[in-house]
Image 1 (cartoon, rainbow, N blue to C red):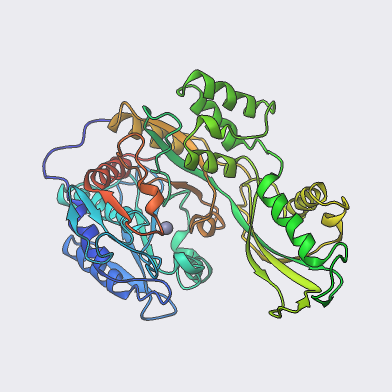
Image 2 (cartoon, rainbow, N blue to C red):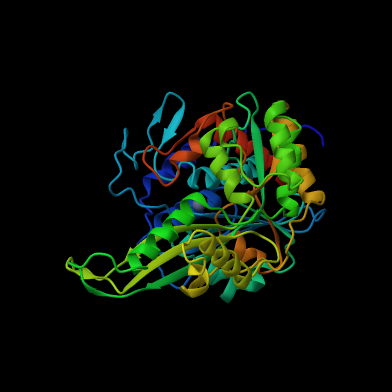
Amino acid sequence: MSAPPETAEAVDPIPILRRLIRFRSVNPPGEERGCAEYIAGLLAEAGIESRLLGPDPERPNLIARVPGRGEAPPLLLHGHSDVVPTDGQEWTHPPFEALLIDGEVWGRGAIDMKGGLAMMLAALLTLRARGEAPAGDVLLAVVSDEENGSRVGAGWLATHHPELFEGIPYCIGEDGGAVLTADPNRRFHPVGVAEKRACWLRLTLRGRGGHASRQGWPNLAVHQLTEVLTALRDGRLPVHLTPALDRMLQEMSTVVGDELAAELTALRKGERTTVPYDLMDTADAVYLDSTIRHTVNATIIRTPEKINMIPAEITVDLDGRILPGDFGVADYVAELRALLNEFSASGRLGDEVGIELLLEGSRNPKAEPEFGPFYERLVEILRATDPEGVPIPMITPASTDARLFANLGMDCYGWLPMLLPAGSRYQENMHDADERVPAEAVRFGADCLYRLLIDHP
Ligand SMILES: [Zn+2]
């Protein structure tokens, strides 16, 4: 593509980001109205009409449609304006003052995802400042409630206003832009192409109850609990080489050191089923471990609260995540039962334990991600803006609002590119204390998004 015209300075996303952080749109309760009205004002100044809609006046979603040149189908940019709470966290700098210190913007939402919203807005406003139109119409959806179920946000829009999204083949949302440090000298630019989905379960363990003064009953519920927790610590569900994973491993293995490359290739070929934790940064290894298999974590354990009584029943709530693709809850539960059998003294714990489904995340109707011209365009932009960086496809271990737009038939990509120093770990402060982002990283993302709007398939 041709270089961007230099007729007007690019709009700086940093003042927008800092203003957004100062709205305390903490969810719960949300209160995203301030953000939505501020964004509506910004857009109006640039001559872009928007409207606020939603079931709760204090928590509106903003929709704006910017007409394109008619050279491409419409494109959706979606971002959420709510943030997670800061309760109980010790911050070095206050989380809602958006201080700019040594080139970094500090505050809740700097990464997740007011930084991303600022990129999207700056890209759109730069177009307007330069008198340009995007290739196709751009629909901007700034939504509420992503951090708490999306019921008044993207979920409500998709259910009550699907017509807004008709004819849109592709969308851009959060994630991607994280930095993997599989090689400390390489800067990876992950492009989110697929997401895992939730499968929350409750295990019920039953055994003999009774007076807690007696020693020695076999196979008590608490003993089974030990086996469950040991299985979750030491065991793993099987590896599934999905197409997205295969491509991710293959592309990573071409740029990392020889030793790690050999291990990644062995994973691809099914010759090993464990992640080489010793060769990778732990956070990266944990990430990789979570994308090659369904995962399971015990999060809530309930027993009767009586110290002199052996509990006859214990429940263990599990946060399970299913890989993208054609996997169902039954497949997942079968793998889990096999794992529990393997780690139980009786060899039957998995068959005997009660398993109840608490919540199932919706399955992307397209089992496999689309690696067509749109994906290639994202990669091309990354290569042009950061020639030393390495774009790779990534599987998001959690789920975002993309799942709701995927249900409307769109191919969704997590693409908020950031130019971060190789080896930096900004992503780790998401949802934690000291969330912050380098201003230059956000400017880089705004530039990438601008290039996409100008010329997208
Ligand atoms: Zn987010």
